[in-house]
Image (cartoon, rainbow, N blue to C red; front, top):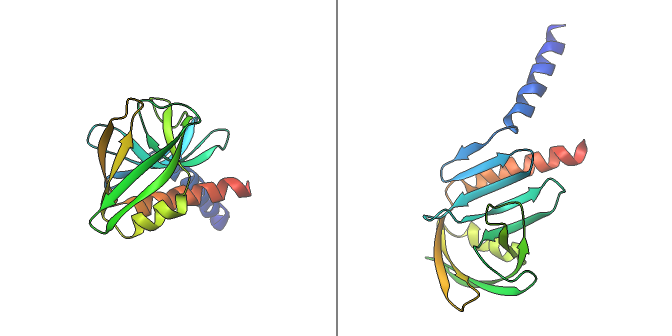
Length: 158
């Protein structure tokens, strides 16, 4: 009987660990009724992360205040280890308050870039031809993304 109680308690506590936000340095794992995400903010509140909406529309994303839905955008990312251009596409998404994100199409390229860096700067293009620079720290990203991955794996087996 005691082992059954411990098993139920362990299951309950593991479920609870996904019910709220968890902080990992500058990153957080968020799970609520609308979305699941591993993300971080720049100094102005712009989000970068990986997430899924409740309908399981998942993406690696960079928040933007404006963009033309369906239009491709080139996002330049730079760190002390180099720079690269990531192809993205503007989509409307519930993952962010502004409802607009640049979905980073070449996720593997971005993950490889992140793996080599402690932080990076993204040059985010705007409709008027200007760009804004956002700096994102990566400390805690591995832990937040691990929590995200474990949650997604748990959801796929239910």
